[in-house]
Image (cartoon, rainbow, N blue to C red; front, side, top):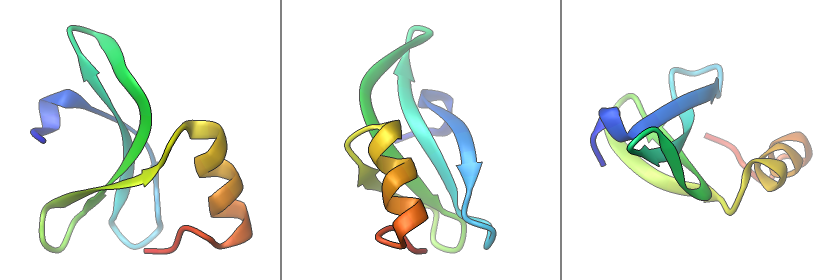
Length: 63
């Protein structure tokens, strides 16, 4: 997943960043992805931003 298809909106405080996938200026899906700054990988993190916030606040998402 190239960077030009990602809109970053949050970071984990360790260099990793969270993003939404876009195409043609529109959000492709509500899924949230995390970019790992150490190995340049992109992984699924949550099904949508609301769930991402809930999981982040409760510690379900950690990087």
